[in-house]
Length: 398
Image 1 (cartoon, rainbow, N blue to C red):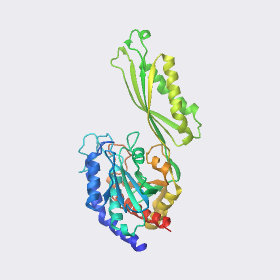
Image 2 (tube, rainbow, N blue to C red):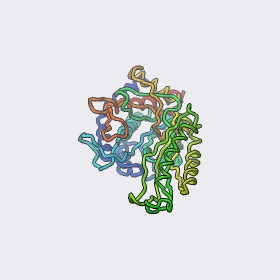
Image 3 (cartoon, rainbow, N blue to C red):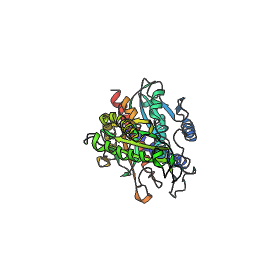
């Protein structure tokens, strides 16, 4: 086993320069959720050039690659591949060439790391007792997300996946470190749109109309009463409206307003209440103001709750490889991740991969226009995944 581990360290060093090239190619040509056509093509063609087999999917974007497909059981590794509608402000030579689209959350890093992991494990597949599935998932950033779609398509079946590993780059952790947490780690996400329908009239005669803007303003304020008065304060939630659109002129009572919001909680119990309370509050405000409305719940991602068994594998292999001082306990986050859907089906965990390096400017927050990753972390992430697969097979096949 130690000889095989040493081989993985050497191969990870060897493939790392190619992974950096792949990452920069992906970063330069980012694509939005469900539009990852060239990204998908690049991933599949690159893996095929190394002899890694790709599955055929019904989904228009995304890829699933296999090593040892004939084995009776599998372990999976997931990467997300979509980018964000952000105009990049970095000055790197591989800056985005797709105006207004940017890999500002590190999905280019995720894909390159998992691609390299696939190449390495494929080269030693005869020494693996099981199948490894590499899931390159589209649309993590856009509700309802790509995870549930791929699960329904059967990516966790044939052969059945027994455990799934995921990761997310983290600009708050130094390069070379990983972050772990058992149990609820990232929040559920309830994304919703509310369209309020009023009645237009002249601004000088508001009594002849129904002011959709006034109703919307009252609704935004009332929603915060859900947070402070309707939910157990020991299981807090956050409700945020990021977009309000409505009105045509300053002297016209607006007849329609669109609100786009999101609600987050780390409590499965609170998640069950959120949609009902949003509907009840909207119904009450609109009825009181003589308006009507349409409520559209776009997504309800579950709480991401890591399994201790998967985190234990992460911890053991990484501490043995790089030292216990390279592992941190990460705090809970109100950010959401549709990796949570996989964890509802099978054991697994999402770890944080440190990318912080002020020398390279890789200390900026996710979803910012100057977000950047330290490419040295690609090596650490690749070693982590390869060793975790080996450790899982070692435990499972005993």
